[in-house]
Image (cartoon, rainbow, N blue to C red):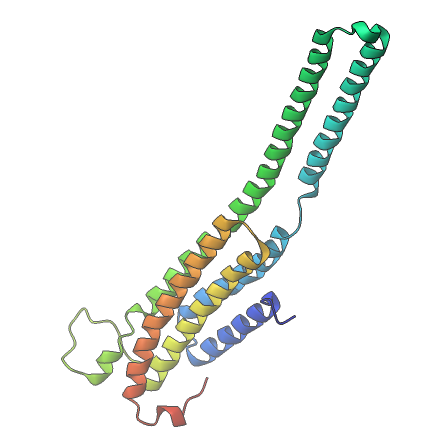
Length: 243
């Protein structure tokens, strides 16, 4: 299917990204972050699929509540009918009202039970999704931290280093690849979040997914500004680009 995100393809792309990053930057801590993102992707793949499946126990409770309500209404209706048959034309109107009241009580209690069971399933799924999305939001910030000190303007060497200056031993090409890996990891984190919007119709979950996608897109856009600076510093960068 080409109308839905494939969780398997997301995981495969992440694993390829991890291999590329490890080959290029074997000692970089970004490798650990991408590995953790792969673990989240594999876990969230199962959990997002579970959101689209019903909780059979709760659905069974809802069905039981409906059956009990129908049984109660049939019982009350039968009792009222029998009273009317036994009393004939002189049927006590208060007896009829009592039967109607009992039937309404059954309907109200059944409606409350059905609503409660339905909301329990919705809240359980929402809680699971929001917890996972919170982790994705956190790891997006961690990825952003890894590129924070990768300042491409340092390549221009506009001034001397200070004692507190971060280590900037990467070449122009290496810096460009590192930033590209960060941007790709952020984009894939957003795609993992999108799996929940694909499996859920809960507006709260969809809003949380949209928030993460906006967050990762904004972070990626800032990284690409840095990448463009690096490419401008490499006149022939396009001719030698490699993963």
